[in-house]
Length: 114
Length: 116
Image (cartoon, rainbow over all chains, first blue to last red; front, side, top):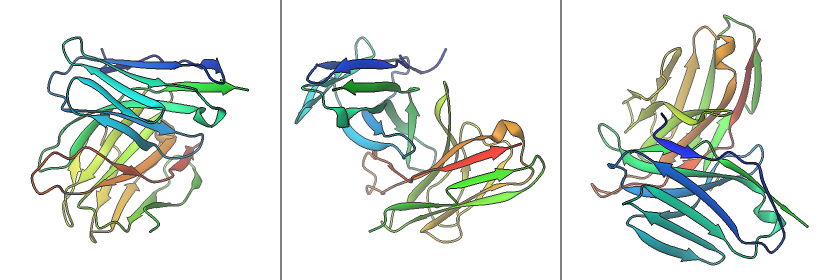
């Protein structure tokens, strides 16, 4: 069983819809929870991160963490065609000697249709 | 700032050939990482470095070697390429936080490698 599970999609929604993306995880040692956005043929870029359980909002994006259920979510309000991308959840632990070990979900492919 | 750059962008190798992928970052980051991304597998850590002159193994290190002779560069080598190494390779870097938590990593644009 993978440490991080994420539905690969694809997910297709109409412009303006609310999108919900989710991941579950099994490792209680994860400290930070992140969402990366990856456009086609590009590298992932950090979208949002959260440290503790609860919600964090940034514009149209809301990240939610429920540590008791080992479940994280990303909500996108008023979705736009420019949001079409693959969304990767990632969870952070510590590497030997420093640095952070990111464990990624497989990514959910989102398409926002006009 | 260019951020994280990777060379080359694309490469096709025959089985048994060798090559080196170059990663460079201009953000003075302490930590650097090499990942591979495969369909259905997500991003997996190959090797990482916590500073100039240091390297360590990640989840899937077999068949790869790395070197970090300069702080800004991290090289990934394939000594004898195999079809199973066909993948998209990403380099990333992250800053040192003075002992505090480190979470964000900055990724390069990737190298698409095909081994036939």
